Length: 265
Image (cartoon, rainbow, N blue to C red; front, side, top):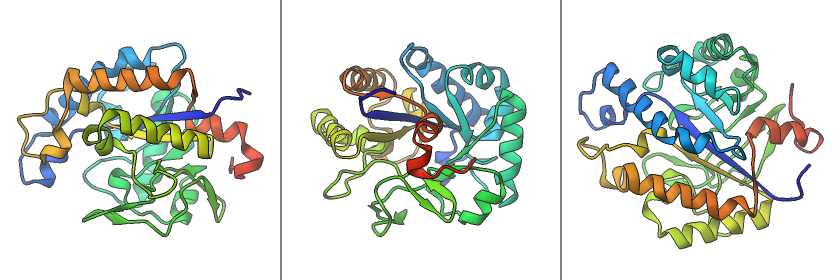
């Protein structure tokens, strides 16, 4: 096992439905097209030999683009982002896992809820998952207040919880919106701070960020830096971190640290 710290570079692979939140009609076909355009945009990054990412994928998206998702599963972990991004029923936890496993021919062990929606531990365990990465342990006005939750990986009633990265001292979130809106040098400093403090760094993005989404009526902070500018920025981030850390899927990291995190198989 490497002595380096680890980076969990994760992507929520999904239909682009954000405009619906802001009362802009967008057809399911267009949502899917923006989603696959984004996935195609980041594929050269995903194909780097040292990269092992976790792709939290809606079963709905995977059904549309089964060949792409199955191909990505050869190198990366495919985890569940439930069945649909815009709606949820508890039964979707199990149904999405079954559908994804059918498509990729591998076991699916991880879950991330769309928009990091709260989910009951027992419901996740009943659906057959080993870990959940639906926690951003910070405060985001209008979305969630999770300041009471642990910042590091922990076990809750038999379920491994994998929070997304926040800075050690002030819980500044290092998720996709920070990557777009914080000066790059400061963002990189915070990433390195987490690696040094915790030994790992959990980041998440969306493929659709990496195509032109300027025409959609979503907040400027959500569409700032898209397409080539953002692609350049994430390539730079990977280059700046690759000599200091190993890029690994969440599932493989947990399996290597099974005793420490009490991963449920």
